[in-house]
Amino acid sequence: MRILAGILLGLVFVAALVYATLQETGVQCRVCVSFNGVQECRTGSGSDRDTAVRGAVATACAVLSSGVTQGIRCDRTRPDSVVCE
Image (cartoon, rainbow, N blue to C red):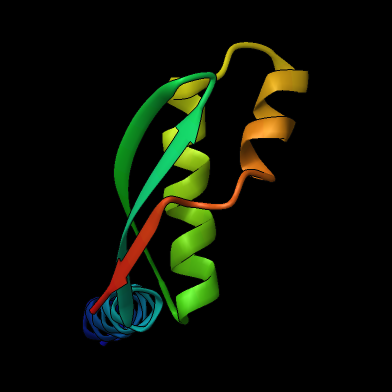
């Protein structure tokens, strides 16, 4: 009986994890950002458009900038293009 309860608990945990993961990737956006004369395009996903865009911009800026100050400036840069699905 204990083993069955453990298996059921494990299945519930896995199902909740899969459900939460699928909910977070409701929107996917491809964003291109130019910073210091270089352009980088990245894809981000999230539960809504704003979250997906912020994630894509942050990923692009991680490549384009070096240091905290440049990273903050890059994150505040308006993207060149945003395409969401």
